[in-house]
Length: 417
Image (cartoon, rainbow, N blue to C red; front, top):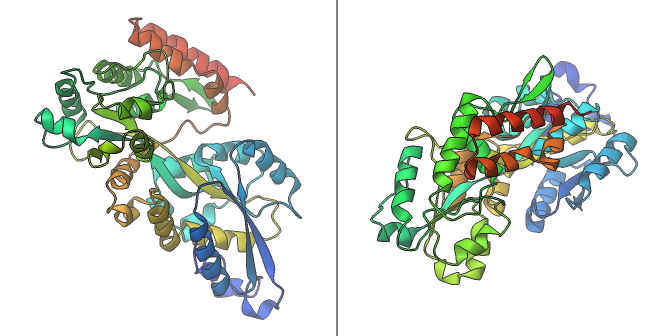
């Protein structure tokens, strides 16, 4: 949502005469079709952005079309192949989906724009890195969301805990202290593999690594095994099921029952908790997932969206201007405040500092990561060996043996083409 559009595309006097959006290039109007996902932005936000954008760009009309996540992958692929007249010029995609679309050369390379005008070096890594394919930038970070610790202030007070923990060691100590008197220190399902991923990254490990174009599973590295060991120790300080994930049963319902001191979730989950137990309205607090050292939050998985431009658009310059506007500081911070998101740059985190849960999320997002940047990662998640690995370790199996087995399965899935 940016208003400085021409300056982003026509950056020098030598280019002005060739820029189709310049005032002396005629009076023909152009419509820019934008696909955004359902619930990503409120209608009020979209109305305000459209009015402002069209006022500042009198020869451009925005046609924003809201899409549903169900079946969106196939729909985007079809649009990248067919193009206009009905295809989009700008598309919102999940940050981990960019490589899938870029692999088939369906996206416009935005590397030069991102380096020159958009502050690429300041983007959140969990959005910027998966937006790359090879060394090129195809996805431009829009907004982020990630897990934090949601905790019960009253249970912390009852246990004599005056402040949230600032390191992982402190987190274990505090959680053990909370795990008494019929309360669970933390509810952590045994197959919450996104949370495990953060612990692995915090130790310097990876889910998978690429070398010479070949991806291999990496759960069996010493660093990844340390991440799993921390997960095991933390998970034992509660009664989370070892053989299911955080949605089975939904952890919001478990937390709402009133005997759980902490969960790891996006702050928005608090709404579901309060719907089931309104008495907790004033008792919920938030802090970033702790890291190994005080003052630096732990690594977390970053979800969110990037904006891409189809290579087959017939309105390249106009599409780039829309992306510049939506991802620029003015409208990006507006979206973050409106929707309780994390802005696309750590330097914009102050814009959401007034909301405790979002502020905690923004602090963690600075250490955010995404799943391995290969289109084949979806094959791993389809029959996720990480979940089985976690359950086996939590039920007493040898971690190194099971990690090796899971790593081999990941390698096999990533080799599938």
